[in-house]
Image 1 (cartoon, rainbow, N blue to C red):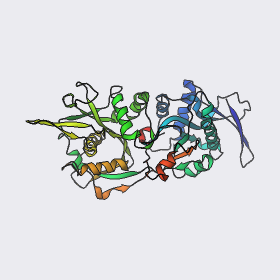
Image 2 (tube, rainbow, N blue to C red):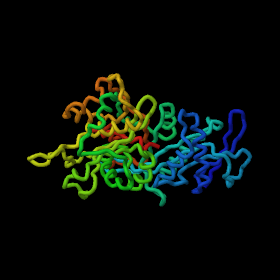
Image 3 (cartoon, rainbow, N blue to C red):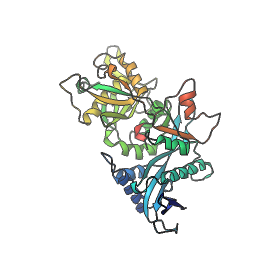
Image 4 (cartoon, one colour):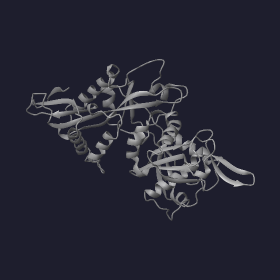
Amino acid sequence: MTAEHVVTLHDGSTHHYHLRGLHDEDDDIAKWTKFCASVFSYKPNPPPPSYFGRHFYNDPRRSANLVRVITYHPNNKDSSKEGNEIVSSVRIFLRTISMGPSHPPVESGGIGEVCTSPNHQRRGLSKLLLQDVLKIMKGSSSRADLEAMTCSSLHASPAFQPVYSKVGGYKSVISQWSLVPIRLQYLLSLRGAGDQSVFLRHAQFPKDTPQLMKLHQIYSEQRFAGCIVRSETYWNDYVSAELGDTLWVMTTTASSSHEDDSNTDSEERIIGWISIRKRGDRYQLREFGVDIRADGRIKESRDAEGTKTKPINVAYVMKALLCKALSQAGETARCDERETVLLHLPTLVWNEIKRDAAILDSPHSIYFDVEGVQVDDDDGWMYTVFDERKDHPNVFDLTTTSEDPVPHLVWPTDSF
């Protein structure tokens, strides 16, 4: 279905635009990916068309019709002609989001890939698209092809937040992040001095998916609000493609798998994973998790008394995985022991590292500079709620007004 809009500019000229969803055809989708890439070409490292194509085709819940576009028809009044230039775009991402440890997940419509051609900006096109997608999401409960969405989320820079607040009633939620200086000389000097009861390797899909999915549920989905609930297909198709060879896992060896684990003795048990990426002057923790189950233990050694075990420690897992990830990124130990790199990570993870480092002996606890840590929260995530029910608190209730606030987090892997 196509809607025609006529925009009159200050000089009195009129311009014809048509609003529609993409057709589920490769040519139409390719046209849209090229448009998005052209609008973002000003960035220092501009995303190519394949970036937007990957986001679309690897999304197991994708729908071409939920990619809403406006096309320009300078001399056309016939809305059936849809082949003209795409000049503005908004996409709805169908997602299930967590609501912390005490409430079930909810369906949400994510808003992303919002862009307008520079030649057609300041004509209200993004506003038209935002109103269109809000109408779709609010009416999702009456559509057979959509799950009923209770809210919508997006990530916006401070300059655009007032626009989303005015048009869609979106409000910001704070995600607590910290900027931690990492002492490279101490961290990277630990390479080769690892624990023989564990080893590090690249994640393997779909082999690792069942374990990663379960551990992610425990470490993130059951502890945060706003965290994307990941299906098996999402892990295999989307996460694997987004992270590629930057996703490292720590596993027990076959000989150290404990007897109570659901895996057979011949299988490895994943106890942690990590992915980082460079963002300006810092590294961002794009993905992280640890097996925090009460029975999670790794074998330490054998002696006359038999096998000893030790609990899985977040600081220990982070140390080993971060060392591997930074080495892959090209970082090397420096002569100056004061030289650091910055790691941007969720504050909850940082607090766990500090807590667990207190029970570790040197050198495990000296690779970060506690005195140099800075608060660097993210207030870009915004939500608007469609279904206000007293029996089911929304993300604002959980993160800001409850007596025991639930921390908010969307892992960068899942950003849109």
